[in-house]
Image 1: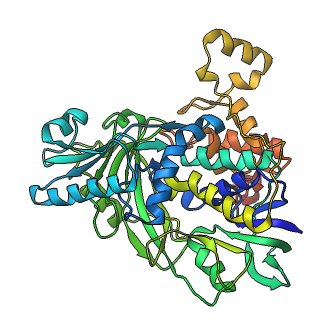
Image 2: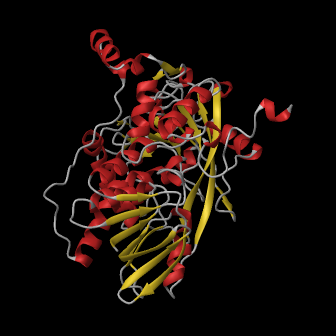
Image 3: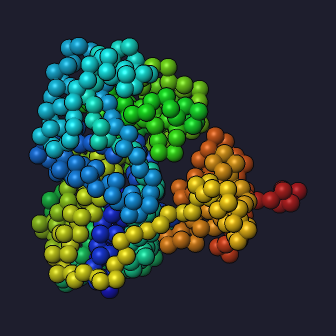
Length: 478
């Protein structure tokens, strides 16, 4: 019997879990994937939006600004990559200056600090590679970039350290009332709880509609991205947006916290909530659109492309509340952009709702801090030499592109909510995220996973499920 079951181990679910772990409660996070951060939270723009885009007075706007303000302190507390690099919204036509002014006024109403419009000269001084088409820009110095894997995993690890249980590879199939409680039916058996927190991303409407007569609808909105090599990482220093259109903010160009360049996303509504394959048309579209605001993007330096799904609720608003006709069921639904930016504030809002519902008591043993993976390259030579002498695995480089050592991979596997797949290792250490995209390091990483987890190497997967690499041996074919 649990006090709280959270469905969904993305950034919203993990933020809620971490905040609720401040209390004396029996909490469980359930997700159908083999790792946290395996849905929308793994494939997005990695942006901490300043908060000028959401409609004034909306919950989106409120939580965006609050989340943005909380993110830097949270990054220090939980030790994940974050950088306040500032953002520019490029205006490419004089006749659209009124729209830029509207965006400024909306941002001011939302409480965004230090917003201002800069003219063409200053815009190009701030960002020399802006297209000549750019006539002015909205400058938001509070805009930032973050590692979405680092943020989500940090929240999950800290929650687990504080007693939250994670049931991964566990798919919820139904939710039914049992007196005052809920039975969460899964493919691994039934779970009983007093409160359900529905943070299931693109599937949040499915679970809401199981328990409520007041239906909601979420559309999976696919966005294609291109990631460029670190040789292109300084092409822009700010996040460069275009003026928002019908389907959002358009294609952006931004550096990442790890030194790459990211271009995207497109916006295509799809029926299939698992449709994360990129398309040729989508990649061509983002290449064309990106060049309208930023000149000479070195697209020949693309090392990978990917697509993510945003959970677009019909009303284009976050839904974070106890469902009126389903006592003890709390929605965290419609968390599309700026969901990543809002995550710290979403966690606090869910905590306040649930703690009041259950009259929870604070846990005096709550641990608010978490230390990330040790990075030997952040040490000086003397410290690194000493580390390698004491722990030789830190002297064994597995991923040459990103210079990831065996010691870091071992740490990633054995931490709370540790890696169980190649993607799990990649998200925690960046092994496989470099120029060769795991072409060289995959076999060695698989060997380490198999050894440390006591598994047959043939059972190691890319990302859980049926994503196995080894389908047989040469002997089998002879």
